[in-house]
Length: 297
Image (cartoon, rainbow, N blue to C red; front, side, top):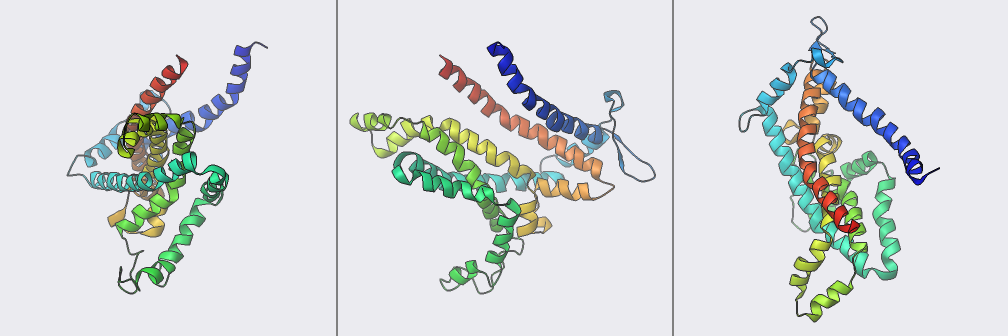
């Protein structure tokens, strides 16, 4: 078998997987969002033929996405703020951990990596449920913070607070951020750091002009891996808050999907979210393609 055919044969299972569980799923979403409504049951009627597609549901969602006016826009704006805060926290905490592990950990690199991967072996739901006990009024978090007079007694972390939702997002997704950043830094040649210092650059200048550019692809990959799923995350918000004032786009889609008469609207919101995430993904794809061309030279 020629190398070309061998590589093609290796790619066939992945291609079948993408067609069945990505392409068909997206097409089904479009068929529901652009389909009709049963006049008696008020349930969505998918339009599998593109000729029969109607933009009524998508247009309705677009109207509610008008800046500073629509209800969906308020939820979308809140979601972006929460994700930006959570992403900033992931960068501030995760980047130093990834840098230390890749550059300075030495013989401790293996144990640290094991500790980073270990949370991924536990169900996301179970990890979030653990925080319900920790954040309860009599939980360990208040047991530490109340004596230090950081929060009052019986402080309700689970009473619909934005800081709890953002912290939960950070905790749940930060391992997925650290791993690609570590992978980028692990390939980093530390002789560049020595050369920068020999040329008289300080620690800050070396970081900004040497370390940060070399880890750019890892940062972009970590951002994509973390931020995109956060937009569809409804479990964290529902478990740690459960009130509409902290609802995110994922919460909105889940609420519509659970309502028999609003499932087509849920699909329409998901379509708009998919388009938005696709736009956010373009800079990463362009940067990855550029990096691939540079490596190939």
